[in-house]
Length: 401
Ligand SMILES: Cc1cc2nc3c(=O)[nH]c(=O)nc-3n(C[C@H](O)[C@H](O)[C@H](O)COP(=O)(O)O)c2cc1C
Image (cartoon, rainbow, N blue to C red; front, side, top):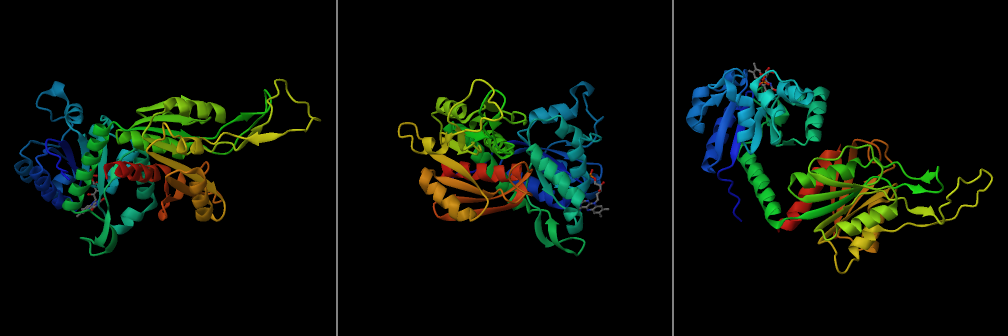
């Protein structure tokens, strides 16, 4: 399997950490792959590695000053961000992580990232306590939520003599990450993969003013649609009522009821991938009353709503190659999720525990188990964006093999 990424244009930003010396070796490895590299040094980065070593290795000019452009009108931060395929910040310090999380733009590195729409990949490196500090962790959460990717940090002995998580990933690990990144995107592009994702609750009207719904925010589904789109999958998100903004590069269809969601899903076929995250209201009133029901008339009857996951899984003529369902359970999570998987004929079930208020419905966090055949893969508590990226990668890998 050829995973070379020759001719890719990489901006490498080197921050002011002791691990900056590793980035010299990283330049050498990337050059071996025939990548084109332009390096930006932060002010502190210059104290750790010299522009001379970098320009000799990268065979390019080194950039470090916002007001340094040879041709003033060109503006380095704009021309660099247009030139590259990705921006790799290695090592990134706690200081720069904070800067990117708050949108501060006071040096070439931060202004360049703010002005760019390219994928940003961060390689953090710092002392273990700096890394685990709540402020660093919450800034990193924000950046992952923006869609930035991260490599490491790994666990090991540090330059300061302490041991723990915070060590910069090795140049080989970073190179491997980039190889996979470019390779996966290439495959997706060539295969022209299409996906539909359902998200959010549905709203079932009883009469013109009353309805049944549930607490789903739609966040997990929106994040999955966004992650798939980032991998280059042509993605349609069919969303029940949700306050969330449309994810970038995703085609969105907004609906209210389960019937509307079903009709929209049917219209979106054929697709290669279907991910049913929506918390469809299981029941709906047997009859919709066109006039407001009077208070003393409590004779309501309900019927089952359409099951979109089952419809997609059993669709003989247009079954997506991969159908993924979600199971929100409050007890015996894995047992019920396995049952749901076999009852609905879907390929994978992602189970989550909605009884825990710290995760699931209306929370930024989730913790899930992906059931694929009889294998159970657990993803511990993390941001929904992080979990979405993990699920999207697993989906993409399914099409690569
Ligand atoms: C010897 C030395 C080593 C340092 N190593 C690190 C490090 O590994 N990680 C980190 O986040 N900061 C480290 N710092 C602190 C940063 O250099 C400092 O926060 C600086 O403002 C970072 O600037 P930058 O983010 O613009 O590169 C170190 C400082 C010194 C003096």
